[in-house]
Length: 109
Image (cartoon, rainbow, N blue to C red; front, top):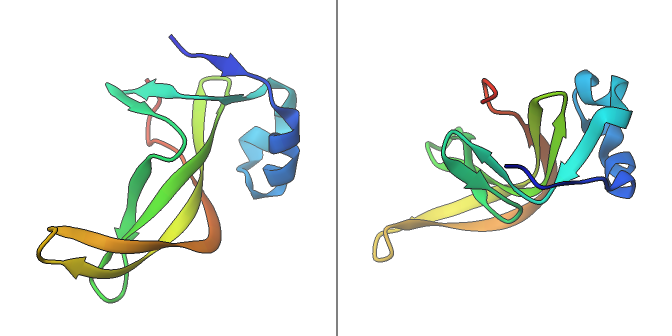
């Protein structure tokens, strides 16, 4: 079950950064507080793996908003910059960047 709430202010702030599907059908676009996709509950502040950068370090993105539109899911994310791998903690040291991106799961439910 999805909890969906309409928040047009957020949608219009990021409207130009969204894929065409979300812009053309803007009145069917909803911001949701969480979504269950393939058994994983995604919500704002969850960090996703984005890609491996030129220096062989992975890059990550933090979900800030989740949109749904006619069965399609879109994560609006703030990119994170990976500084180093911490051997002791066995994890990466990251900081938020000023860059924003969007990501969509490859297939929907």
